[in-house]
Image (cartoon, rainbow, N blue to C red; front, side):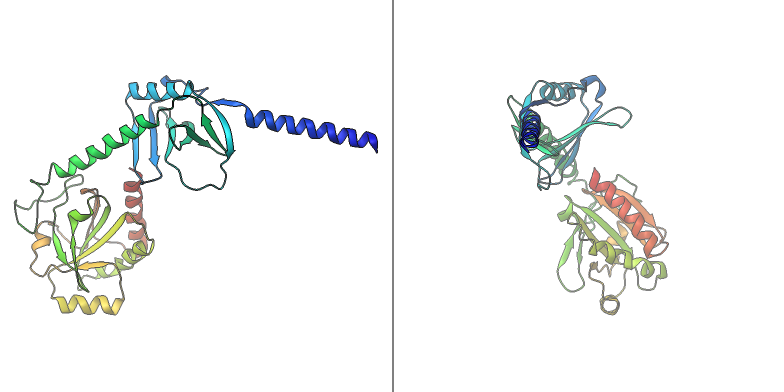
Length: 303
C-alpha cells in the first residue's frame, strides 16, 4: 500500500512538472519560417470582416522578423473562446500555409489551444496601419469615380454595354411595398442586381434562388430585382402571389434598364464594393443559379 502511494505521488509530481514546464515555457512564433519563404500574409479582421493581403517583401520581412524576435508565455486556454482581431496566415509561393495564428492585441497572441502574452513589441499597430491604408484605398477607388460614375437618375453619361470590373451605374428605384433603393448606398456591400419581367419564364423560374439567398441571412449581401418596364399593379400582384420577401423595384419607364443594356433577360450582376464582379445573361433554374450566385458572392466576401 505504502509503495503504491509512493508511486502515485511520483507520477503526480512528474505529470505536474511536465504540465508546468509546458505551460510556463516561452514560445517564439515563426521560429521555423524564414521571411524569404513567405510570399504573402493573408489577414482577416474578425472585428469588421475586412480581408486583405500583405505582399510587399519589405513589410513581410519586417513582420516576420518582429514575430521571430518576440518571446511569449502561455496565459490561458483559448479553446471555445469566441472573437478575435487579426487571423494571420503566412503563405508560401505554392499556396501552403506555413504558419497561422491570431494576433488579438498589441501584446496578445492566440494559437489554439493557448493564449500567449508577448514580452516584447509585436507589430499590431503596423498591421492596423496597413489595414487602414487598404480601407482608405478601397474608399478612394469608389469616391474618385463618383463624378464620372454613370447615373440613371441624372443620365449624366451615355449608357454603354457593361463588363466585369466596370463601376456599376448608380440608380434609385421605388420598391414594392414602399421605400427606395439607391445602389450607391450599398457600395460597402455585395449587391446582387437582377433585371426581370413577369412574362419571362426563365426570370420567374430562378426567383426562388433569390429568396434562398435572402434566407441565408448574409449581412454583407443586398438583393435588388428591378422589374423591366411593367406597370406597378402587375408587379405588385406577382410578388404578393409568390410571397417573395427580397427587394423588388419598379422601372416603369426603362430608365434603369437603359444603363444596364443587355441582349436578354434575366440579366443578373454580382456587384462588389460598387464594381461589377460577375455578369449573367439567362438562367438555368433556381437550384443551379443559386449555386452560381452563391459561389460569386462567397468569392467577393473572401476578397
